[in-house]
Image (cartoon, rainbow, N blue to C red):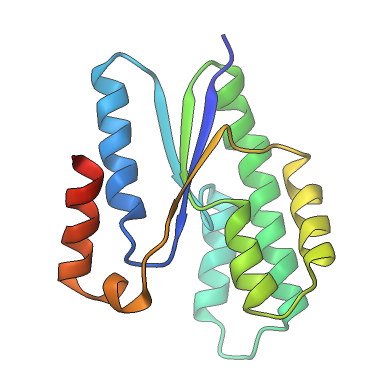
Length: 156
Protein backbone atom coordinates (compact mmCIF):
# COMPACT_ATOMS: atom_id res chain seq x y z
CA UNK A 1 0.00 0.00 0.00
CA UNK A 2 1.35 3.40 -0.99
CA UNK A 3 1.52 6.08 1.68
CA UNK A 4 0.22 9.62 1.57
CA UNK A 5 1.90 13.01 1.61
CA UNK A 6 0.30 15.94 3.49
CA UNK A 7 1.76 19.43 3.75
CA UNK A 8 0.98 22.36 6.01
CA UNK A 9 1.60 25.88 4.66
CA UNK A 10 1.22 29.33 6.19
CA UNK A 11 3.11 32.13 7.85
CA UNK A 12 5.10 31.73 11.05
CA UNK A 13 2.73 31.65 13.99
CA UNK A 14 -0.24 30.43 11.96
CA UNK A 15 -0.49 27.14 13.85
CA UNK A 16 1.06 24.79 11.30
CA UNK A 17 3.32 22.98 13.73
CA UNK A 18 0.62 22.63 16.37
CA UNK A 19 -1.93 21.28 13.92
CA UNK A 20 0.68 18.97 12.38
CA UNK A 21 1.41 17.44 15.80
CA UNK A 22 -2.31 17.06 16.51
CA UNK A 23 -2.93 15.30 13.19
CA UNK A 24 0.11 13.05 13.60
CA UNK A 25 -1.02 12.06 17.10
CA UNK A 26 -4.57 11.32 15.91
CA UNK A 27 -3.34 9.18 13.00
CA UNK A 28 -0.90 7.32 15.25
CA UNK A 29 -3.66 6.55 17.77
CA UNK A 30 -5.51 4.92 14.86
CA UNK A 31 -2.51 2.72 14.12
CA UNK A 32 -1.28 4.64 11.09
CA UNK A 33 2.50 4.89 10.62
CA UNK A 34 3.34 8.60 10.42
CA UNK A 35 6.54 10.49 9.62
CA UNK A 36 6.62 14.18 10.51
CA UNK A 37 9.14 16.52 8.96
CA UNK A 38 9.74 20.14 8.01
CA UNK A 39 11.34 22.39 5.42
CA UNK A 40 13.90 23.70 5.42
CA UNK A 41 15.95 21.27 7.45
CA UNK A 42 14.15 17.93 7.27
CA UNK A 43 17.38 15.99 6.70
CA UNK A 44 20.91 16.31 8.13
CA UNK A 45 22.06 18.05 4.92
CA UNK A 46 19.03 20.34 5.04
CA UNK A 47 19.75 21.26 8.66
CA UNK A 48 23.36 22.08 7.72
CA UNK A 49 22.19 24.29 4.84
CA UNK A 50 19.68 26.03 7.11
CA UNK A 51 22.36 26.64 9.75
CA UNK A 52 24.71 28.05 7.11
CA UNK A 53 22.05 30.59 6.13
CA UNK A 54 21.32 31.52 9.72
CA UNK A 55 24.99 31.92 10.64
CA UNK A 56 26.30 33.87 7.65
CA UNK A 57 27.04 37.54 8.07
CA UNK A 58 27.27 38.27 4.38
CA UNK A 59 24.26 39.09 2.23
CA UNK A 60 22.92 35.98 0.50
CA UNK A 61 22.34 36.32 -3.23
CA UNK A 62 18.69 35.58 -4.04
CA UNK A 63 19.71 32.94 -6.61
CA UNK A 64 21.94 31.23 -4.03
CA UNK A 65 18.99 31.15 -1.64
CA UNK A 66 16.65 29.69 -4.27
CA UNK A 67 19.14 26.99 -5.24
CA UNK A 68 20.13 26.12 -1.66
CA UNK A 69 16.51 25.61 -0.67
CA UNK A 70 15.99 23.57 -3.84
CA UNK A 71 18.98 21.42 -2.84
CA UNK A 72 17.47 20.99 0.62
CA UNK A 73 14.16 19.91 -0.92
CA UNK A 74 15.81 17.50 -3.38
CA UNK A 75 17.60 15.78 -0.50
CA UNK A 76 14.40 15.77 1.56
CA UNK A 77 12.33 14.22 -1.23
CA UNK A 78 14.89 11.60 -2.21
CA UNK A 79 16.04 10.47 1.22
CA UNK A 80 13.03 10.96 3.48
CA UNK A 81 9.71 11.67 1.78
CA UNK A 82 9.71 9.19 -1.14
CA UNK A 83 11.09 6.25 0.88
CA UNK A 84 8.48 6.81 3.61
CA UNK A 85 5.63 7.05 1.10
CA UNK A 86 6.88 3.94 -0.71
CA UNK A 87 6.89 2.13 2.66
CA UNK A 88 3.20 2.96 3.09
CA UNK A 89 3.65 5.70 5.68
CA UNK A 90 1.83 9.01 5.90
CA UNK A 91 4.34 11.86 5.62
CA UNK A 92 3.28 15.19 7.11
CA UNK A 93 5.53 18.17 6.39
CA UNK A 94 5.60 21.63 7.91
CA UNK A 95 6.11 23.47 4.62
CA UNK A 96 7.02 22.22 1.16
CA UNK A 97 7.03 23.70 -2.35
CA UNK A 98 4.34 26.33 -1.79
CA UNK A 99 6.74 28.08 0.58
CA UNK A 100 9.12 28.62 -2.34
CA UNK A 101 6.44 30.57 -4.21
CA UNK A 102 6.01 32.80 -1.18
CA UNK A 103 9.58 33.28 0.00
CA UNK A 104 11.63 33.13 -3.19
CA UNK A 105 8.90 34.05 -5.68
CA UNK A 106 7.09 36.91 -4.00
CA UNK A 107 9.79 37.60 -1.40
CA UNK A 108 12.80 37.64 -3.72
CA UNK A 109 11.07 38.63 -6.94
CA UNK A 110 11.72 35.50 -9.00
CA UNK A 111 9.31 34.84 -11.83
CA UNK A 112 6.75 32.08 -11.44
CA UNK A 113 8.49 30.22 -14.27
CA UNK A 114 11.89 30.28 -12.53
CA UNK A 115 10.38 29.20 -9.20
CA UNK A 116 8.48 26.39 -10.91
CA UNK A 117 11.68 25.20 -12.62
CA UNK A 118 13.50 25.02 -9.28
CA UNK A 119 10.57 23.21 -7.64
CA UNK A 120 10.21 20.71 -10.49
CA UNK A 121 13.92 19.98 -10.49
CA UNK A 122 14.02 19.49 -6.72
CA UNK A 123 10.83 17.45 -6.33
CA UNK A 124 11.01 15.33 -9.48
CA UNK A 125 7.30 16.05 -9.77
CA UNK A 126 6.31 14.84 -6.28
CA UNK A 127 3.20 16.71 -5.20
CA UNK A 128 1.33 16.42 -1.90
CA UNK A 129 -1.89 14.45 -1.76
CA UNK A 130 -3.26 17.24 0.44
CA UNK A 131 -2.06 20.72 1.37
CA UNK A 132 -3.58 22.58 4.31
CA UNK A 133 -3.02 26.33 4.08
CA UNK A 134 -3.39 28.46 7.20
CA UNK A 135 -4.48 31.87 5.95
CA UNK A 136 -4.24 34.36 8.80
CA UNK A 137 -2.93 37.88 9.15
CA UNK A 138 0.58 38.63 10.34
CA UNK A 139 -0.91 40.36 13.40
CA UNK A 140 -2.92 37.25 14.30
CA UNK A 141 0.17 35.12 13.78
CA UNK A 142 2.12 37.28 16.22
CA UNK A 143 -0.43 37.26 19.03
CA UNK A 144 -1.31 34.58 21.51
CA UNK A 145 -4.97 35.41 20.94
CA UNK A 146 -4.63 34.64 17.21
CA UNK A 147 -2.79 31.42 18.01
CA UNK A 148 -5.54 30.20 20.35
CA UNK A 149 -8.23 31.15 17.85
CA UNK A 150 -6.71 28.91 15.18
CA UNK A 151 -6.24 25.95 17.48
CA UNK A 152 -9.81 26.26 18.77
CA UNK A 153 -11.35 26.51 15.29
CA UNK A 154 -9.28 23.63 13.96
CA UNK A 155 -10.05 21.36 16.92
CA UNK A 156 -13.85 21.75 16.63
